[in-house]
Image (cartoon, rainbow, N blue to C red):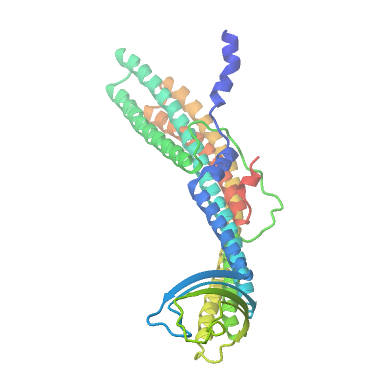
Length: 415
């Protein structure tokens, strides 16, 4: 039974633990804000269908009833009419085509917007995921420090009973122990805060984590943000809207066919005369009309110019956004190199802190150094352990930021 428990223990430990990619994938499917972006995409798709419907002929039906008092020979007292009208635009100067293009670009922009938002959510998940690891590493180091301080307090108390240590020695160690306990509580709060944030974004419990790392960046090709592609698509949409306005100055050709049938009652009568030839009970009218705006004091032209200025504003913002992304990409690459160098430094620092602590601890227990030196060495060792893990996890965050500013999806580079 004991052997079976040992074999099953790892399974129970990781049964409810999730890796980084799992958190991201779950957020993609369950995060309400991402779902809202998907609904926007669907709405934009419906907008395309709506403007495409304008190419189809329109069919209108109607009915009317009129009662006239007094009636006349050509004006019956009661008239009931049914009519049907079919019409189609033969030419509109390219207005409908421009509107369809504008809606298509808006739909394209909504897709890019969702992708950009998903990547920003990914960065948040990465940050919380690794900060949990950082805080947990600090917590474990502080826990070891707490155990060491507790052991030394018990040891010094024994010496105090034999007169080899003073109450001051005990108090100093006790103060260090209490301060460490406070730091432990704060660190535990930081862990819980990051866990709750990660759960809020992803929809998964973050109490237990599987450790995932990012691939080391190699030969990464730079491309512009999806957010920049959003602005580019919006600029194209604005350009098409301007064309739709300008189309108002082109000839507008419309073909229509209307059929109506009427029923007359309460007819006026004249002796020896029939009014059947005067009242037509059904008629079909086929017509074609051509309209063209000749003068509006440049109203539509000015409206088009306003829209063109909006496009120019977006184009200027796009250029600035491109320069900004390139700058951040260069800095992210530099940060990556700095983080890697820091890892080597903290490794050396940890090795030195461990060696110093081992020496000082032996001397302290032999009575060759005081508890101040011991506490300082213990503190340095605790900080070195925490800093070593912190540096490693910050390096992973730096890699995700580098991929992000390269215009990539960081999720695709998780090992």
